[in-house]
Image (tube, rainbow, N blue to C red; front, side, top):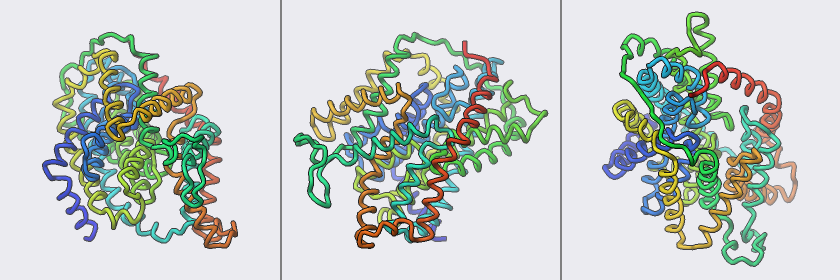
Length: 508
């Protein structure tokens, strides 16, 4: 009953006309970003962060806007997967397997409709799971001391590569790079300057908003220019909606299973929506067996991954809100936004900033309804966006990033720094070094250092305090498994995903 009361308070925050307007705006913009191949939710949220500061939004409104963008981008990723056989982002890869064959058969509208409904179901299940699990985990996290938090942050870095990570060693290198960047500035414990090189702007450290917009948005723009800037108009035919009510009802068990599996995958640090969509699709294929036509345009093959990746997107918010540890790349960007608003994510957030937490959760429920209402009647509008050459879209995205960053500090140095991070991100991606661990190291590095210092002060310099408690020891063991498992399971899982992708025809 207490949780229900908090949720009602959250609806009171989310349903104000001001917040509702930004939730609707975020849902539309997120869907637009999601349907553009390659951008994805992390880049979409990164691009919109400067806009939130430019408009001077209060914390609750800013977070409602960005979480709506997050949810919208997860919806939008399916559009290019179905119509072009080009995933809008990595979690939408599995939607290509049956979505594109449906489009080739003239049932693109049906595939888009069933994917929208499945996305709604998965998002709803994930948000309900968030409501039930987050307060319980937050109360448990109140028992953590400095040693336990240090082990928790270590666990976050160890599992960041995730089961689908390409190269665990490169993930470790990226996280180490992020932690090194986080040490730039004046040490608050000793007052010592670290890696400032006499540059006054570096005394306060690296602004992670600059790093995020540069690494995600600017590097993505550079990739866009390199690979797709010369593309012309595409002629895309959606066709008429012929989906029957019987077909829709037949996918309900698929949607429910996918939503639950996706939520579980989202809660696991480092797993995320990609794993959620994969296991949802794989399980459904095994359940249906020879009765299905998976890989040939089976509507259950569209519903399963969409329910899975949208359930995972809500699940990834659980560790971020309750422990201050992001469960995915996009939640790492949202974590940066919270920190920049002087809000400390973690168990105390549920008491000190309850209006923001429950306002965001309520906005997710509202956003899923808005997205379902938007995605079916406005699908033609989103499809036309895919026909616009990137050379017309790139200047708009670039303008939002530059104007937004400049409006925060009115410093030309910050613009140069953002571009520098963008170029660095471009080369890191060329080397296949992931960017999310860099951001996580930059965000969690200071807190990790602070908790390490507190633990050693309490123990009089005895390092054994870091693994003295059963809880800390358990976190260390799980962190060890997080480093080893990707090396063992990751290659096998990637081979299966690649084999599944080869079952579909190549886009024209």
